[in-house]
Length: 337
Image (tube, rainbow, N blue to C red; front, side):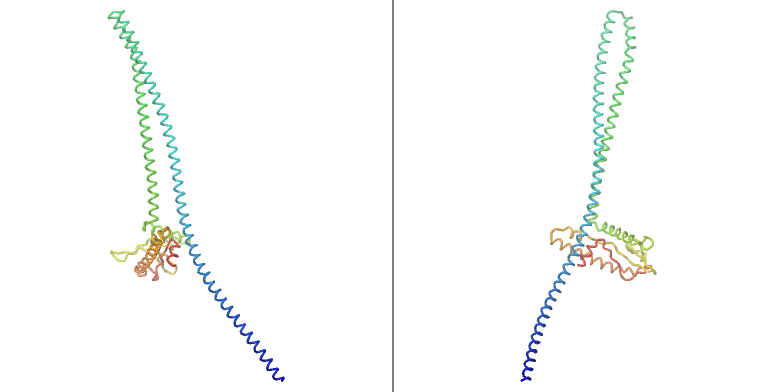
């Protein structure tokens, strides 16, 4: 009986242990499922984090471009305000000159009327005087009076001629000043139109001209190298002409001189016209087409650089690769994604 009791007790303990084992296995399965859910959630969070990083980079690039165009607009607005101030000053001067000219013209007309009235009045008086002298005197007296009259009228006639010449000279000088002012205003209008055309051409060049974008990429690369502490002509050189034979030559954009006589070639001529259409596009189809063109442009440029074989150039101690510089980082990240 004691053996049976011990056996029953052992069986009970064994069943309890089996139940505990089953419960532990269930808890392990539940914890494994929880762990799998956490891992899936973690991968999902990592994917969202990458997307947020990409969106943040694109947003920063848009912000940089907006800041650039905002600065351009502020500069053009400042120039426009300065030009408007100059125009306002010249318009004020024109109004002042016009007012002075009108006052001078009115004064001259008034003097001319007074001169005509005086001349007519003097003529009438002298005619009456001559008639009276002719009536009361003989021929001899008439001749003497005529001579006296001529002596009296000659200074007056000279003064009238001098006054007439002075009025004519004043009108001529004012006409020349008015012509000069009109010419200056016309030159100012042409200068304003030229400035507007140059601003429009600069905007079109930065947005659509591959050659201008390439030159801009070279300038950005030079600034990056200078900010890194390198000096042009010492640690790096730009636009180096390497002649292959009498009829052909190659011109790498930048050659960085490394220690121990090593060289690295950097190419900066990158077309970002398609990326600009993708960045500013509103239609999703146009953006997808622009993105495909951007990727095709990058791949074509990579193939072109691969065929140039810069490492085979005489006098160039470079490895068999070329650094392709893209001045806009979001454009590079977009193509990599």
